Length: 316
Image 1: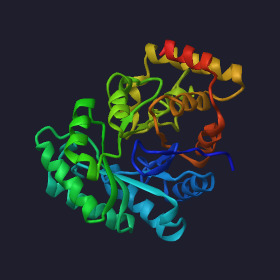
Image 2: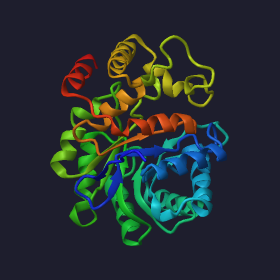
Image 3: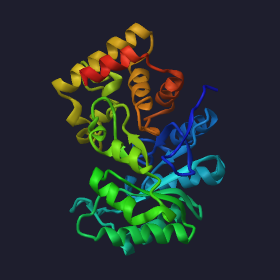
């Protein structure tokens, strides 16, 4: 097996793999067979952090993961992360809305645990900010979840720095905020402005999602949109679209150039850059299939030389 690095999430006692497996497409673009192959490969290579959310595919992502944990992979082998706070309507008549009220959060947590077939999460996050619910109420729900044993650690996701800092303050030192999830890649470095410095100062960790720039940094979209890619998917085309522009293309070309010089793939270079960035404890990546995940795990041993990192920093 390739070397997998393990890190503390911020100043918490939670130990996680530096690569996390995202399951946003499980139960939709990723079927049960592929999901099982991915999870088994990930754990076999030393990966521990598996990331899901109650909102992913209307709960089907959690359900599928729960089935795999019941039959194929021991619950103890994974650091199970899920998220709540997004209310969606299956009919499609209304888009998803943020709801971080105490009732919704705790009801969602119970539903998540039932789907996952476990009595506790390792890390539970509020998925997106809810600016209508008082943050004190949201913090009280997170505290209740820890005190009741339904989760070991808590945090937030996609919060701006000021809101993450406020939440950390409300949770205090006894409960503590273990970490924040935020998008982070060579195509989105906004976390460097305030969130990462805040995390380093206050002691919460950072998990960067979409470390491959929503798939664009692999170089697969350089000439056209492959028919089997997320960019061609009905559900995910809008997710990829923001990075199919000239600014992103310059970064993608620089990654491809660096990769050619190192005799590695663009995917490996982009991921090594994200994983090796100061303040990032874990890079979360979602693979469409096992072949893709194998390529992702192959990047686990790559450390970029300072001069290559400097050039990529400048270009991006």
